[in-house]
Image 1 (cartoon, rainbow, N blue to C red):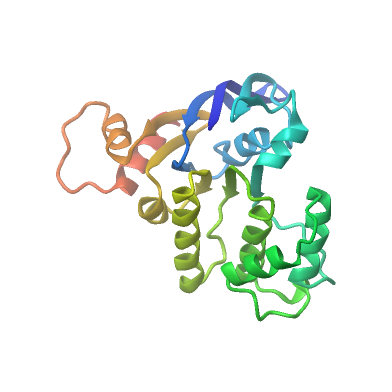
Image 2 (cartoon, rainbow, N blue to C red):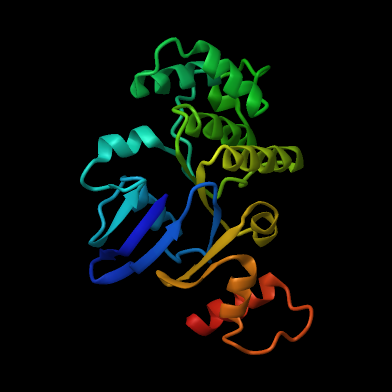
Length: 244
């Protein structure tokens, strides 16, 4: 479970994230939606322990992130919007390196299984020859390497071709079915519609709406009657515009 209490990040007096409180439960797939600069990456970075909050708290499975970062790294998987792979090494070699950081013994069968899972089992070239979509797939394999209980992903479908998007949806649904918590940011509202059972809308560092898609639609309409076939994208743009 993910739980934040008034989570805040201040940069030189400017609140990049402003008192966010949210809860994401077991087996839940939560889409974290917002425009560029809204605070999505900063929020996720605090949740996984990469940066410290200015105020508030974040708990992963009731472990406070800032108090026990070692435990957090054991139970969390993270796919950042930027890959951090060694370009001269193959996908297998990169995952072997990260498996040592996690203290995973006899990691070869797991690595082979994960590369097959993300569609990279036949790729032997070094990572610097990978396309962006291939790097995204390798990043997903790395995020699953420690069999995390909670999976964070920052813009996970960036650079993926249609086959990769379908594979991503399959992975998300399978991992959620195992009872894992999945929290990912995206600009793609159609993608979120396909895989998420809850949404969280952020703008200017503040949560504007959260809940199921229907609940979020109602909150974004501010109690106004539904005008007919207004799309989630249209409601999102109206809400973000009002908040700005």
